[in-house]
Image 1: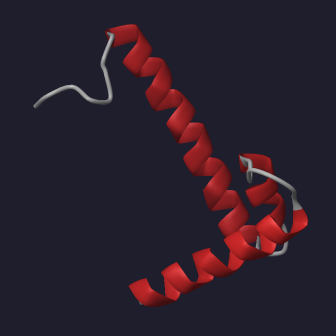
Image 2 (image 1 turned 90 degrees about the vertical axis):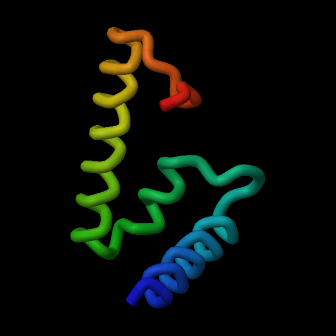
Length: 68
């Protein structure tokens, strides 16, 4: 199962990198997922969650590299 996910991730990444010049941006990757609505919705959900986590970290002054 995990191998299938990795292979699909690589396939999407290669497809997107063939369409754009230079660095692949988040919007480029989302464009590559446009035909798979389920994955596109999940990717957007994860991006929103990442923004929320960043906001909370700023409020509480939490560093990503903080020692536990």
